Image (cartoon, rainbow, N blue to C red; front, side, top):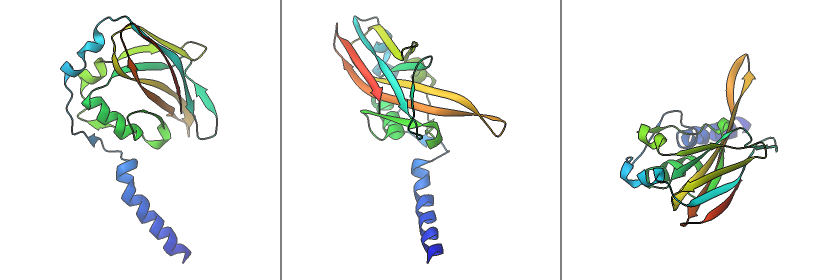
Length: 176
């Protein structure tokens, strides 16, 4: 009976694995359209400031000090990618050990349409002179560890969707 239960759970995991732990790129339905996001490169009069923390499986919290934070404009293409990575379009986190998905098509221009910064020693980030609009703020807290004499990436990313009005200063805490 124990073997039958183990077999059933193994089959269940195998059926779910293409959805959750896919190593193959996920085919996107939406295509990248630069006209949807080119406004992000326009100088504005708004700002986003905040802190980012990643909650690890060992119950430790790792701050973003020295790590990158990106501001990604909201559009159909980014919405689909974010949803398929985090399971929603509002907030969340994903750990490297959970195999974050890769996507196809993975438009180069998509990666060019982000604003980047680095967290300071107090785990704080800041984006100044940005255009009003909707953004995903993504903290990438990823580092390498030595595992079996091989460098392996660990950590993950945290995300929060933020709406910024003209002349607004938004505070954001990324910690889920």
